[in-house]
Length: 138
Length: 138
DNA sequence: TCTTGACTGAGAGTTACTCTCAGGATTTAT
DNA sequence: ATAAATCCTGAGAGTAACTCTCAGTCAAGA
Image (cartoon, rainbow over all chains, first blue to last red; front, side):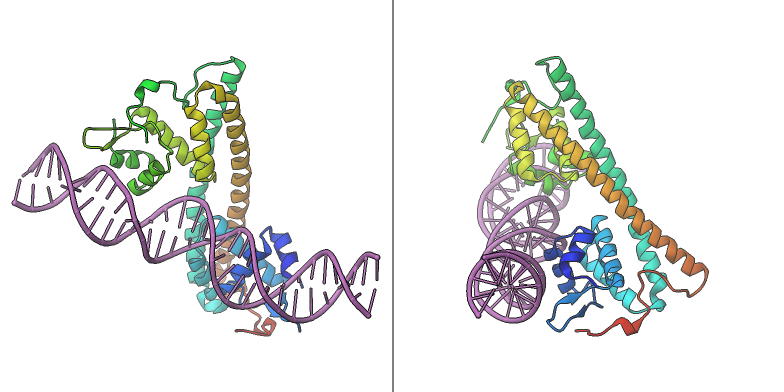
């Protein structure tokens, strides 16, 4: 059994955030000790991990809650959960691809800067040189 | 020259968001027509694109603003901009890797669901089956 | 003329944190 | 033994980045 601090450390979230999630009902099975301290089992830890994964891929806490609630309802909801997970994995793949594209754009820009550094002061894309294009400024 | 609507369409942002960014001073060189309508040049469009890329990789608007302001100061700031861009590209690569890991985790979970569907009702990881682990519920 | 699309500023609402406060319990150091 | 450090709690304020609505203006096109 893990304290919230330990859990935070393992899954790389702040204890604040874990408590925040707990408050939202995302970990419905957590037990407490005699001092009301949350104790996370390995199963709870798996929940925290999947919640983190769903957040990282961009699912809203509201939708994560729905998914968790379905989990709590047992095997009758397996098909529904499958559909949700399938949609999320697809969406996540698309986002990943888009993030990759944007990353490439920045990496390319970085190359221009590197060239500029090597060649001393040379004109660089993205760095506006032409003051005459400015017509109004606030 | 493009209107805000056209720009939004090209870079895949809402006109709302483009105006929001403009208000924050992220596109300092935009010209206006005689009716005060924003007209984006190709250079401005490049700005919008790089702002989008920086946002997508997770840079705050505050830091993007700083970067843009450096751009406006001309070639004297090339080295500084290079450092910023380098740091951002590195950070972005790390985030991309992390997102990829989380995506894999979900994809693996999806496989369990697929197995469960094929085998009819079978126990699935992440889907708690053991009511006896529940000690308290709010 | 009337719809469409652009603009303005102000401001409210939302999501997901993120932090601060006040307070209580337990462990560790002196 | 007492004090400091470290854990925890709940309540609630603050923040970032949208996101949208309202109210009102202006101008071009069917």
